[in-house]
Image (cartoon, rainbow, N blue to C red; front, side):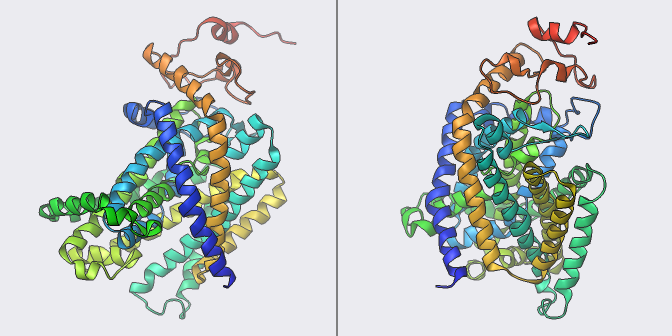
Length: 502
């Protein structure tokens, strides 16, 4: 057995028999423990999306920008190819279990993102950064474990998945240019992507949030419109589509026959690994948001899970399933991106394939810059040396170029394994620290029920481990763009009592 096969076996075992069980258990536990916060507070999720930054000064990002960064990383070619592969290998029932895991996983996303907000740190320019490495260090006082998490994330997202996204971008041209890898076109794609990537990561600190805030909604709307068009034009097929999905989802042989490749396992894996809930990646974006209460960003990150899986993955699933109903003989012979392309081509011909190809390019590039945001935040956790950061950025550019030109199976297997390591670390930690997220949810709920716009003060939670932010004085310069907030007791006194000039 060569190294590629060995790492592939480790990857398959880790995800099938360890991670899926841990992620599913986390989703169920946090859903029950929070009273299904991901369902009870759906109106609040939409309410807080467009909330302006809490403070006027600094380069911090808004709630919406932070959600777009996390969505940019979540929404990748897996939303297209991954869903099609799950259906092709596990059957239509995989779609149902994908939906179930999105609902459960959004509770884990709430917990980890709320924790990331509580223990975020402030940069000199007024922006914020944080994530699992930061709450591991500040609460558990285990910096070494935070460093291991950061290294795993960097190797996974910056050096593994970004190469994969670049390769998928280049390979999307195979329909038009079968020999694209031999005629230098892949190298051209690599240079183009690297140039766009360089423009994004060099220069203004808020450029990543600005680009993702524009690109992610645009590409999502285009893809949603395409899926809706296919669905509406074939509305008569929907009873058969949902019939296939539900019957296959609860078919004994589909569920338990060859469990690792069953509809339930592939649906669970697709739902969890597409939206990344509980894996420790999205909290790095959640921590960057400038909000008045950590729970607000926790709720918004739960909504991001819904956007990824219940919306965009479902778009891919509906297009594939319509094709599955209309031409099962052809559909069952295809897999991945070719299956989605043929499903769209079945309705719109060559023009449909062009739209899918455009979506792949947008999804892949947004993932590249979202993944880099995560990686840089964790690189800065390890070291803030400017020369080291420059070298790191150059390496990230080279990975994008090389990824477009080559299919590095070993590198991608290792990236999956590293993601498994970071997910296991994060899941154990959020089980340990989840009680603080529960207390913050109680604090948010109490203020909300009192008719207030919730504002978090760390001192209001007895026993809360020390935080760098969230003290009374941190709210003194709060933006007056938000509704007037009420403070009582010691908090009001802290904000209004003149400070000793000494």
